[in-house]
Amino acid sequence: MKFKYDVIVVGAGHAGCEAAAASARLGADTLLITMDMNKVAQMSCNPAVGGIAKGQIVREIDALGGMMGVVTDRTAIQFRMLNRSKGPAMWSPRAQSDRNRFSALWRNILENMDNLQMWQDSVDSLLIGQDGSVGGVHTVQGAEFFAKSVVLTNGTFLDGLMHVGRVKMPGGRISEPASHGLTEQLRALGFTVGRMKTGTPVRIDGRSVKWELTEMQEGDNDFHRFSYLPEVRRELRQLPCHILYTNETTHAILREGLPDSPLYNGQIQSIGPRYCPSIETKIVTFADKTQHQLFLEPEGEDTQEYYLNGFSSSLPMKVQIDALETIPALADVQIYRPGYAIEYDYFDPTQLRHTLETRLVPGLYFAGQICGTTGYEEAAGQGLVAGANAALKAQGRSEFTLARDQAYIGVLIDDLVTKGVDEPYRMFTSRAEYRILLRQDDADMRLTPLAHSIGLADDSRFELVEEKRRLRDELIDYCRATTVTASEVDPLLERVGSSRLSQSVRLHDLVLRPQLNLQLLAEALPGLRSMIEQLPSDRREEIAEAAEILMKYKGYIDREQALADKLHRLEDVRIPASFDYMGISGLSTEARQKLDRIRPLTIGQASRIPGISPSDVNILLVLMRR
Image 1: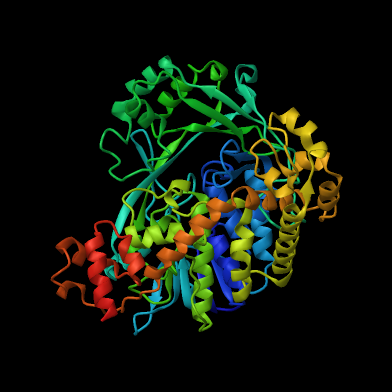
Image 2: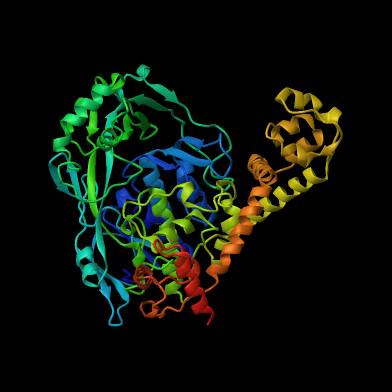
């Protein structure tokens, strides 16, 4: 039995699984500790992965060699590409997953991964060395494990407290105990601690639903998926979701229950997620709305359990049931369990470095909801970065970080450590100033070479990306070099409502027309059709789409890249770690206080701290040049 490791990861949620896998891939001897090995990568809330900006994060995780995209594709029971009516910078993949198979596949991957061991237990304290750095963990079973780096991914378990109406239950998730001890120790070490709240909806027995009174929502059935690996495919039967709506009678019952709502009677003091409000918050905030859209989402391929998306609640169980019965499709509803809210501890993320290592305790890393975020995808992205850096530190290697123009994960982490949080942080495309560069279609081009250079991505994945890059560029070059005559394409142009040609043009120029795409043009042009058919059959559509996006949006991409390169100059001006901000009289009092607390690494990071003005940045630039 081993008790000494390079890296210990505490918690096997989405952050912990990616952290442990990343550490092990880098060759670090890794231990993953979890309370229940049957709840690995548990989907605590909705049985879905991805969505607006979240889907981009999952594709980035896959491009970096992570496993969330692979597991999601193999356990998906519905896939959709959201925002297809908008430009490709806004396209966001989302999948419904079979909850039980998702967890089982993750456990299978971890149990069979080289350099990785698992231990079922609960950690109640850290082992801190005489030099103040982390040295390992102590568990409630009395075991001590030692490591050079420790990653905490405790989710909602730190002093977790659940609420259903006025009923309060200690726990980190329904029917699972909370974790105690770590918060108290970290607070004593000087960490700033806060409380946050999240919630989950009622679970419904599908046999009690009047499906004919709902609107069916089918998924997509095309080549899109999360993983860039061609051998990864959707393996399960694809199922629909169903749309239904609340009504004024529903809202009246919910309003009557507000005096017993923990959110409105003072029972819950912590802040919940703004962009995933409970149903009681919706009827208060949007009092003029006569209905709210809900989604019945299947929990698996062979279960009757359904998740009611849009009806998150901590109201008393009877109020929840009475309100549901006013919705025609749910008039005879039977539920498996009511919705509930949960409060938990988190730590101000400005106490972290961009590697997600804590400033106060060297070798200690945080990832996931412990940092004040919400969402499986945000947690997994942090977990990968924290796990990789924990392994690199244990091995004495250089750290790994992602910039804001490299990845949504980079935007997420920079926002956390630079700006902090005052509510659960959720990623949106609007948070990224370079979202045209951070599209879901090219995360492999952006990130796999970087991941390969440090050992996160293997040789076969890197070779796939380089082959894709070569084939994509050859297709673009063909379109630029090929001349098309009016006789070849005028019938197609008339059919799609585009203007006829007055003279021969480059094929590339036709691709730029909004009514046209490579698929349509290939129908009229045998040479293009042959060029596309020569692409690998398992990646043909993916490569063609990547080429088409680059051609259509090249001007926008180049302009945004030039802006990113210009602003990089501020990122290159580093600030000494010991710089005395409080002694700079030219800075505003607010600037001195915030700079001294956050200790930015570069002028660029300093410029993004709320309350730091352009004049403050100019003063810092002058001082750094000196």
